[in-house]
Amino acid sequence: MKENKNPEYLALTQEDIDRLERETPSDEELYDLAELYKVFGDSTRVRILYALLESEMCVGDMAQLLGLTPTACSHQLRVLKNSKLVRFRREGKIMFYSLADEHVRSILALGMEHILE
Image (tube, rainbow, N blue to C red):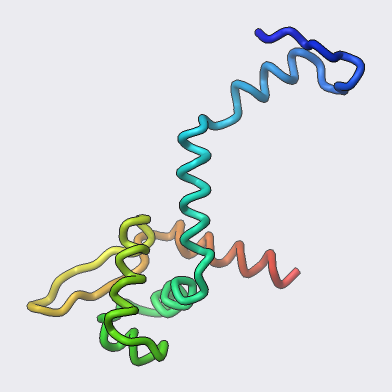
């Protein structure tokens, strides 16, 4: 328990401070969360995620739909895959990508709801 050194500046009680310190995620968890949100900082990646809301796609179809080169599309999909936002399956030589799970749908929906308020 840390001592409240400047009590005249704080409206929180020591119990409040202790509770908040216990409930605040670790620095590592906050770093990982910030890194996840950085992935959403690129509109091309967000466009890819929105395309995958409808159905899984191969790189070629996605690149054509979004007006990207297959190389640029593959690069962005790699970033999304490394962030666990998309998954893939192989069918012969072709890779098909889809959203990793319902959390990704929720993140997109909540973000859109927020900006449209």
